[in-house]
Length: 158
Length: 252
Image 1 (cartoon, rainbow over the protein chains, first blue to last red):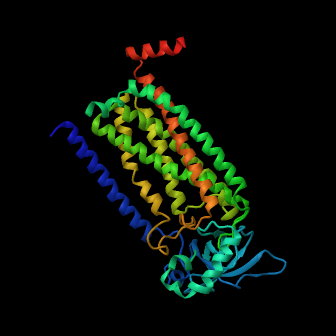
Image 2: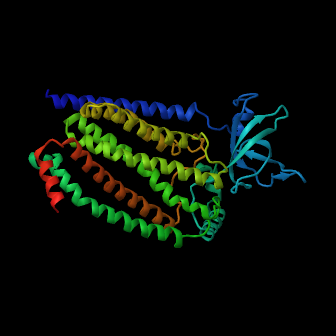
Image 3: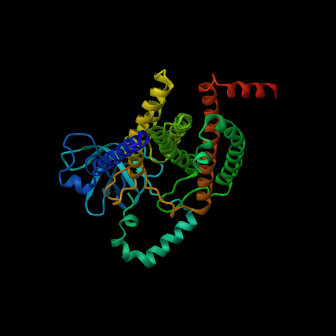
């Protein structure tokens, strides 16, 4: 074996090792490092008690309620299966709205309400002008609405 | 065949080749960059609709996506030249790796910086420890670590080899960055950053985005070639061809 071939084997093994490490890191990312918890996970008791964590999901339609004379508001975060009510006092990001994805950071109170310190808005990967998007949405509502069960990507946009 | 293949791997021949190619890459970068910027500012919608109702600020996408792609791609290039250098012991491979890395670091910084500017109006925060943002930050530290390690070792050949190993080990971050938002099951990867999809983008927005990415890529070629030329001169300073070259350039 020439010296060059030895080095080639060495570098190949190094890159293979790096690939294995990457695969391990990726599986860890998916299962262990929970960036946020979904309402289902929170209601199953998977989220930490008395500790700050992130709750993510979609703002349920018609659930945003504001107190008069105050910046305090409540809304419901859902993952289409379960729901958690969130209370928040402060300024909301531009993209916050009903039916939009949201990530909130805070603590779960004893009353089952999530008291958020921070509310971040999430958006999806669609970059379409309003007219086009409206047409697409309309077509989807008329034609493909029933097929949503098979397409989690388009139905759950958080 | 073999002589031909390795012809340009000699620093002395590559020095003049890189010098001849640099202006072409620079011109391509400027032209495609200007066209794409014009397109991005004037031929695209003022606001988005549907499930992503962003306003004018979405235009950061043109700079942001291109620099993020370049940050990952240039790291693969650095690691690739490093692996070639380790296997074939070619001086030029290491020099290329070292000259691409600063541009990669700049694009990584630019991706993080423009991302912060975009995140404030849309998400509501400059920064959050989201998997995508965190892994991109680690990539920036890898670039800085690679450059720092290389300049910390005085002997150029030892510095080349040590930094090359670090570059290859750091390659682990590139797939992590990519799959941090594009994992197979969308419900599994909880992230603030949206997934990436080429199909759900308006044609004009996509044109500006891909055009500027191309411009950034050409810019990377140009700056790497400029940098590798000075590295070649520095390392080959004792040789006769450099003396002749300098005389030629000095006379002109």
